[in-house]
Image 1 (cartoon, rainbow, N blue to C red):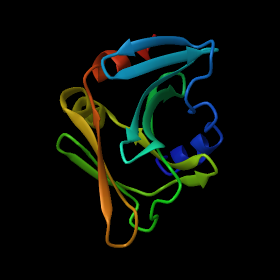
Image 2 (cartoon, rainbow, N blue to C red):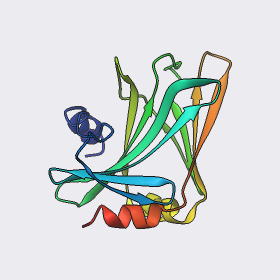
Image 3 (tube, helix red, strand yellow):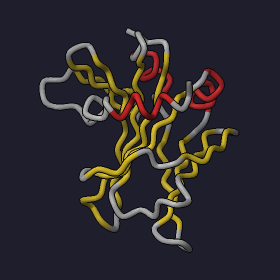
Image 4 (cartoon, rainbow, N blue to C red):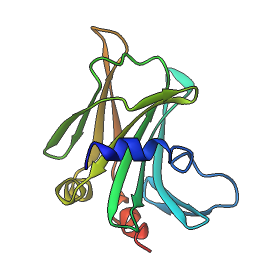
Length: 156
């Protein structure tokens, strides 16, 4: 089933994009929940201080009638794909393949199980490692204050 999640979400990529105008928006610490037409997304974006136009984001959404939480990581084009992405949330460490690269950037999707959701609720940050080339890696930290109330707001 976990292999189906990325395939299913490829058709949902527009829904997982940052919200358009007219969305119902609420802040949860460093996270923002946006709902439009019954679909809600919890997101946080970071900009690269060295290249201000480059945005990295993490988004969460509940699918399958709210039964399954998914996380999508969005990175700009130009990352080195073979090593994939390194993800660290509390004591959980995962290696993720990049699911797809489209003109707006590269995306990786992960189904969030109960244990990972508990780590999200108790950790300080999501650490994301990616490579620029074979020998150079970068790390981003998405702060987690507000994530618990934000994830709860996706259940409404």
